[in-house]
Length: 418
Image 1: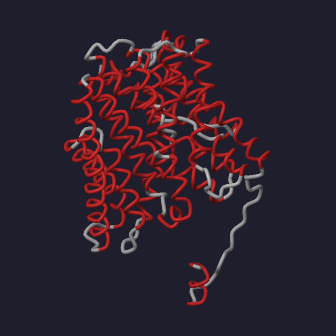
Image 2 (image 1 turned 90 degrees about the vertical axis):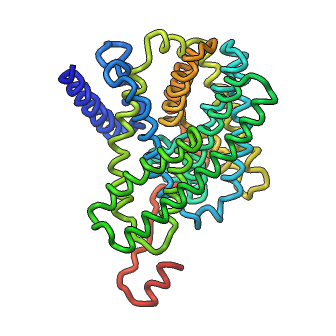
Image 3 (image 1 turned 90 degrees about the horizontal axis):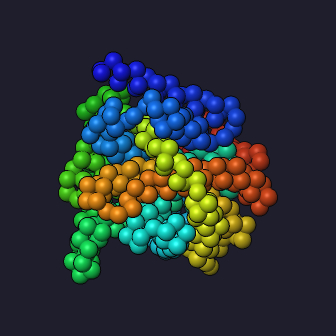
């Protein structure tokens, strides 16, 4: 048995690398090949069965891995960028999330015939977009700075918000009674925000202090940051269920915006680590599907549901959120054309499908296949159309050039930071 697990792990890593290499060669999002390889190895060939191989360890591993990914995403967010786009981003992750949630829930109920509870839950799960997919798209498209920053900030901040929304819906489903559910939702919301901000902020400060005081050598900065992320995730989740993702994101944002400790080694380490984690997660989660799930997701109703999300839900959320924002019409249209779902949606749907299955909630078996339908469909559609749309709307930079300032004189440093 142990030998079979070892071989399976080797196959997963090999498939992950192969998918990324093929994507690089063909200039397409790697998630397409990752999902394809996972489905082939799992439901089609029946070789890879993650639940049997890893048992109860699988979902905790997925959850911690997502926390690491969101921490790495937080490390890319500079407050100086947010000052210019803060209003738009704030509305996208608040008003935009609510509008997206309503459209998806309505579509799941009327087009897929799902009950109200599961429709609302699916709507909450699919409010997230995902830095793991948006990042590669932006690197390929190279949009204008403000537009790219809006999509980057939204993709990272919306993930813990979507996870929080999902846990609140989860609690409402379990409690049932409106009055009791309202109190539970309010309590959970407050505890999640407090846990995320306080725990994430404190541990970011501690890690920066340890680095500044040189209590650990340079080569251990990456390892220390990984340990801190895991500890933050565990402590925050112990205080409030599913708050660890927010705490991990806040920790990354706080760490990258502090000024007194260098974190270049942490950024390099986390970027390399996520390149390994992301393919493993996608293959594991897609391998958990069954042929029945795949057929269910590819139904006619599923296709219309996907188009509703892309052609109605996303544009509605963007145009309402960017009203009187100063963005040009072509910029709004481009933001409307980039909202692929990624690993967070896959992970959250898998976790809550298992949790709700224990309570025998009707139609919970639809949660995972519908989520993967949207992941696969949105990545294919946005992946192939957004570069063309960017050129058509003239928001991409065909040949972006920077300025190199050589020398360390005072005037050169002032010019560089200006």
